[in-house]
Length: 444
Figure 1 (tube, rainbow, N blue to C red):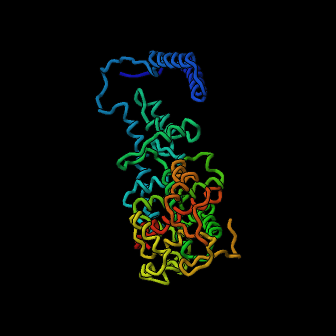
Figure 2 (cartoon, rainbow, N blue to C red):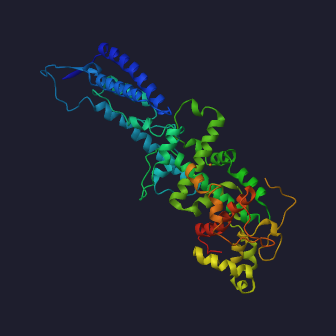
Figure 3 (cartoon, rainbow, N blue to C red):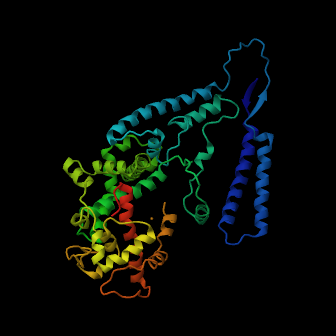
């Protein structure tokens, strides 16, 4: 048995098929973006789809014709026509072994050994990378087509078309209509964009916590300026260069990353994905230690960053300040709030500070200041924005009637300024609890 390629009948069928396919795709795109679709247009789309199906089923669309040959005089060796397809698996195996040997060196650079090796490889995989029999998929495709079995199979064709479109109303509707799964399951997306989304949030959270404790007298504007300088892509690309992540990244050799700016942006994203991978496997403390070691070169600066001082209210009363509740009417009001949320604060004055507006000025109860004259006040994403939207945040704050003002006033009408203030209250009350929960310290 043998096989010979038939190109004459195939080429004519392919031209007709391609022409009909283009018209079908164009009509489908127009109908998908049309506000009102007519029934006659739907019928046209169905007719073209049926015509495409008929062309696919014709014999002229087959890539070869079968020719029967006598087996007399042939030796039976056991080697069949698919041996070259198995041989093309060798580049994949060789690449896999060599790459994971390189990742062992990356483990030494970051000071953390991944138990789940595929998680580290996923963090290093750029969205442009598709592994199809090594780094030369075209060579493998040509070899299989010219001397392989009748219908060559190389990799998964669907992987090239999944999750490619990121914008558009149809994509938005599709994303918002999905429900979360009850049990954790691995993602089918084989690149590091999801880990980058997670790592970006981890880096910003760690930076915010450390800056808050290291600069207790700095207002929000100054803290935001410092945080922006630390978490911006230009700085993260420098940290990625310290780890030599450009030597471990998996990406397609094309024009996308030829420019230096594009490559540095990809390195920053890869660094965020690495932080996200460390957080998933080792927890928040491992991610904090890694980020602190990379942020500073000297040990004394690393020591200052990683071992930040406690809050000034905690310094005044290292054990607890709940004994002040008996003499403070303000703190007495907050005990009912603790009962409602089920959290007992060791340092209840931190909770009082979360409810203190800036108009109060300096006071010994919460150590707040009216103004610092030396400082100025200066998006995974769809789903997370919905939970903190400016119209839903104030509704949550209305259920927290413990705002400390000077002098005490009833709830004002919800204007734009009041809405901004009420939106900040849930952030303040949750920040200390979230920080203590993540870093394993007692609630304060």
